[in-house]
Image (cartoon, rainbow, N blue to C red):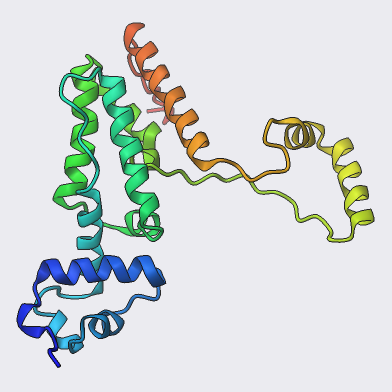
Length: 227
């Protein structure tokens, strides 16, 4: 039985690591489990990656490289939108990707190329360096096709009668929250994450375009030190 050691290389290690993380999650993926999946000893992996952190860095680089490049000549807003929606498709295909991207402390070439391409699209549209700077901050994690919402909700009782009483109380105390939760078009259903991301992205891109046409400049920072 062949162990596959003779053909083990960096690409094969990365392919196996991405597939394993897709299957069991990033937290559960250890160097030993990856070695088992490749039918090699853990020491064999260290010829190709120095440690697990370096491996995860390379995995992020591998999937970010799959983000599609828009067709040449597309208007800047369309190009930025297409890049980000492609990033979302890539990240969604790998459920571990968000945690991996958010935990990286250094950017590799593929990550830098994606960010540079987004900025270049905006510069090509005539946006100033200041507006591009603020736009990238506003996009934040959305440039990778995901967002982290902080919308906490109360835990409702399981008992139907208690649940109804709780909702009645909330309707008095928090009427706007209950109005939205019970009358919005998707009331009672889970949010459509794709639609939410696209909505926020389009709002931001329209705002960047409007600010550009209005000749926006950053506000002058006031010196509040008293000096």
